[in-house]
Amino acid sequence: MVYLIISIIFMVLLAVVTRIGTRSGAGPLGMNAVFRGTAGVIMLVVAISTTDSSSIEQVWRLTGWSGLIAAMFFFWAGFAAIKAVQLGHLSISWTVLRCSMILPTLASLFYWHEVPLCPASRTLIMRLGGIAVVTLAVVLLGLDHARNKRALASGGSAKGGSKAWVLWLMAAFLGQGGWEIMLRSTRTLPDDQSRFFFVTIVFMGAFLITLPVMVAVKAKLGRKELFYGSMLGVCGLLASGSRVWALRDIDGIIVFPVTTVSVMILVQIAGAAIWREKVGKWGLVGFAAAVIGVLALTIRF
Image (cartoon, rainbow, N blue to C red):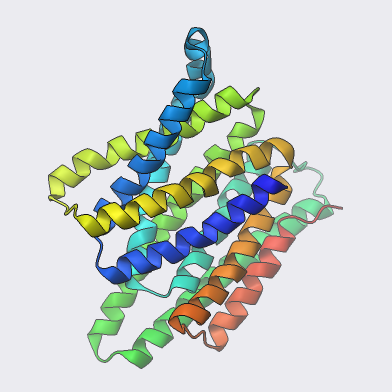
């Protein structure tokens, strides 16, 4: 339970620091590179100091390729999320991002067969209903954001801004969902050494993917990117890394929904308290639908 609480706290801090960094003018790509690099170096040091060199080949067989695939999702989720927060509403963006848990839920149903598909049980019906309600929540939150943008801006600028926000947010949604699926797969890892190795590959892999992209687009890397990226690295490491250990001790059917609902609510409070972000009627209905949908994804009969 301690690891789950740590994960929730630092996920909320991750959202807040992301907002502060983008508001300060820090470049998304540079900030994401420092974010992944900071966490990767910390994990590399820990992994080297705790991993027996004679077992590296065995640990790589267990976690290597899955860690590299997870790293690609992790890189894209981080960069796209920063862009989405830069362009739009923090609490709505983060709520939609957390709703990406429907993707690992689908994987749990149809790949890991955590719930029998035939004959259809009440649990399966609740899961599918939860996916439908969460999808509705994402649509309602998007509509609320678009309405607010039109109210605050004039002409085509609001429409264009909303379109870019939606595209980046959907990219972040898919990237985060892919990362959540790969994270779910760590439940079968046999020991903490394998978990350390997996998280190290994910963070270092995401960092290495970022480097050629930065060179290709000539992304800026100044003091703001270094400062906020480092803060994100520490928050992200504790948020994502601690969940691997939370999944070791607690069923994923508890970890994912408790994390999602808690982060959605706390980030909503932070957005309202710090930046006075307002949510309209559609947004309130969307938040309520998100919570109900997430709970429907967790109830067992």
